[in-house]
Length: 223
Length: 396
Ligand code: HEM
Ligand code: SF4
Image (cartoon, rainbow over all chains, first blue to last red; front, top):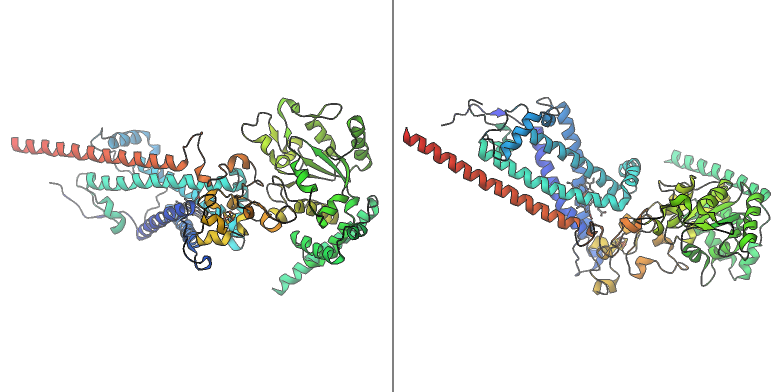
């Protein structure tokens, strides 16, 4: 029989809101993004009464800008969270011994993972750092695509800064293509991420899944 | 707002003064016009009214306020004073064709007819050593004053020996460097001169590049395959009016002409927003003039003013004619915009049918299968562990 001690606070409210808002944004962005890449033809009805692609683009841009702000907020939390600024934990993979140990654990060679040192395990830190990179890149390419079609206000200002990046990447067509490739990286990340959350929940029984809602993890005695 | 307006009017008044000074200078220092432009207009049946209309259109095309209309008219009258040396390198001469041919003359065409071409390999009567002499004389006579127009890419491979021109077999590279060094302004006309164009398309065996890169000078890039004559005329008018290059974007293209995307003011755009797409050539949507995105239009990635200006006496342009834009004003379009009749994400990777979406689907399926196997194995191992524990308990 295993004994549980009092629940331990793991995630702040800010972190949880940020997590789920990002999750929703990314789901909507993937769906609307693919609908922009493969728009659906609507043959019936008068042209002037229809605005389907226009609306899809609107929601894509809405959640795209939301994601941009969420990402800035997340970076702020990583460095300045008063509960636990986790930017150091994102480099847990630098501990090579732990990293190898962790990979063995995931490959089901080891029965136990390495000891918990920070918020994230070594592989987890690598995955999240990669995700941050992905979000950063998709935001940059997204802002370029947005600026190319809208020539006023702050969008135009950001575009004027990012214009050299567009050139560097090989023109707007390549920016769009990279944006599309990155989308697939998100899909892959989500598959693994969701599975790992369930797996940890089932194997360690520390409440990994519910922690992103409640904020609390449970620690087994003796750990 | 008032301050802003005052600032703007101040700015433009200053610009207008500069423009007047510059035009005086042109009239003083450049040779007499070859032809009396107003007389020529009359002879060609262009009324004063049409001419004034044209100045209005040109002024707005150059993104100048209406007070500049008289200046544009004056620049047009002085158009034939500007000596032009026109060089051909690795190209098809399609740009010359597009710019110098027309079925009925409008003001742009008459302007181009009066252009003072000191040297143009395709159009001049002289040949061989005689042509070479024309070039030398023009370069000497108008040093620092002439405009050099370059059409075609410059091969750099084998030290430029893939392209040799003229009676002495000079390489394109050497000729270009020589002519550009004494030019007041250099215009790269067409995709090939801008970034290398089709001669520079992958794998580019002759190492073709655009004039600006090959010759190490900054050029005004009139991109397009072929470019629009109005963009060319406008750039020359700008040179006459201000004595300098127009403001350019990162690709060296004049901002007034290449500042916005084709997709931003395409006449089929309302159909795009409404979700009305041509699915295949000749279908119902094609007959109704719907958006060509799904049959490969690259308008969303292409900066150009084709929808405004159109081609062939402003009659039509590719999207109007029913085929998607192929993005010919963009760097590397031959490679980056392919396939031309499919959306961009359907480009084949490494040949064959492999697209990024196919790869994405396969990877996602493989990942899903991988985690599923992992899950099953974890469950089996756990069951084993539980059974072992049970056995142990029983033994105890
Ligand atoms: C997880 C995040 C995102 C995903 C999965 C995503 C996905 C996509 C996809 C698949 C496309 C279509 C590309 C194509 O046609 O090949 C697209 C287009 C686009 N995305 Fe995103 N995107 C994301 C984030 C963003 C962000 C943050 C912005 C801007 C702030 C943005 C702005 C755009 C724009 C402007 C377009 C082009 C729309 C058009 O030209 O009509 N995206 N996105
Ligand atoms: S035809 Fe091309 S440029 Fe025109 S709206 Fe459709 S995608 Fe855009």
